[in-house]
Image 1: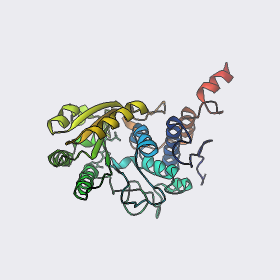
Image 2: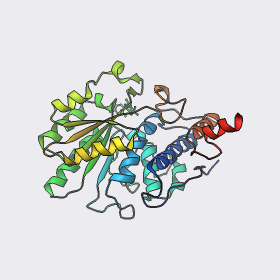
Image 3: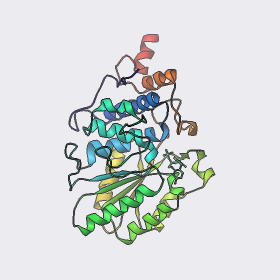
Image 4: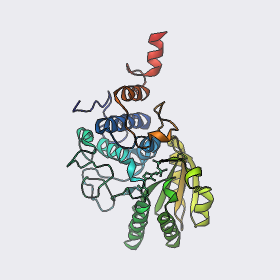
Length: 299
Ligand SMILES: Cc1ncc(C[n+]2csc(CCOP(=O)(O)OP(=O)(O)O)c2C)c(N)n1
């Protein structure tokens, strides 16, 4: 199939047309379709942070998709760059480019490479994929905002496994040193990285205490609950003189029954049957694919 089936609901309008939960389901379907079409990519860590990106791109950030280089825009950096599919889906559905292009993920000459490429695609603020580097540039962006006396905000997303990369801690130290209260960090705290549990590979816990020790304000949030995210971001914006970390409890593979909490889905593509199962898990309530509606039919 050359064209992706995007599901019944295609979000193309201004933010607010659909509830965030509907948008997030569409974005998760996009992730599944993209990785399936490419036969490679990273579904697990894309699905775990889908709600965080949904909240930021569709509710929180000051953006102008038609003017992506607008100087006063808020900036989002996906430091865990392997989650590129969810960044691409978020940008496309938000109006940065045609969602039809999502089907070109990882193809030769596509603007949608396996990791985000700054300059190739509108809305990408930094090339990432080498873990730790995105957060460092986010700190630089926040410092630039301070020096230029701008009031835009910088949002950076780390993976919890990414915290095992030493460079992260230099940037965390610098952000506190320069009192970058215009910087909000998120950690996608799904407990797993590429080879298994973070606590077994190289234990970065306790994450909250480490950030506090480095001079950050820390908030805990449910990374799949928009109200919880909104509350934590409001506190981050009100916190002055230090950066804030929002440590988001999440589930790797969230929303797809057989992917949840499975490290094996970090970087594997679903086959045809698995894709259909995943899309059924992610179907909109009341549509033919909705598992609840299906149960009714089968009764
Ligand atoms: C510097 C660096 N080392 C190793 C890798 C290989 N790598 C890619 S993803 C990954 C695991 C990341 O785990 P986590 O940050 O928890 O991501 P998530 O589970 O949220 O997808 C690793 C080790 C890399 N991309 N960059």
